[in-house]
Image (tube, rainbow, N blue to C red):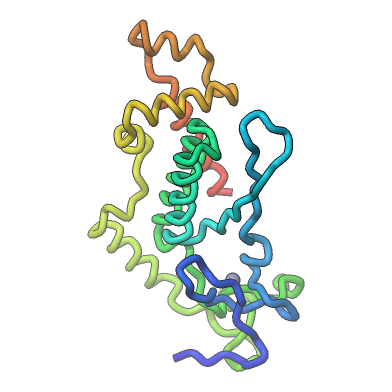
Length: 227
Ligand SMILES: [Zn+2]
């Protein structure tokens, strides 16, 4: 078992599932590098047609299946109680679908506590192949077993194919006609789909513009995650 210097505190962030973040807190702070930048954020709710918000919800950090599950439940209950419009709910649920797909990427680059930076300003001094801080509090630890977990990840990818994120076509196929309709309306509202494209699809057997938008968004998402 690894032992860590006592002066390095554990990040105080508690996930939606009740467990505490395992990463070290930044030096002199209470949160780790990731949670210092990604925190639950309030989102305002507007009553239909009103300009002032009358309540707000807390949007959790989308960091595990629990947080996404909690958000799905919240959105569904807000939609059923007519606090948000169905098309907005459709878009939020689609975003959550992408988020849950991203979580299934090979262990989502899960870092060991000692691989997480606690003093970002000193990161430039980390030697190649070493972690930013050591278990003894002096010098650096070698960044162990970088190859092995990758192999394991590849193996379990092969054996456990459901870990692969669903393709756009699978997402599309899993949606019912009403969901597609609500999403088409939502994307039309935001200008991603023109009314003509929808008319072509509904009455002239044209391609579903929703599928094209979903594919475009997935590509943009993949592009962002490569950066
Ligand atoms: Zn944290």
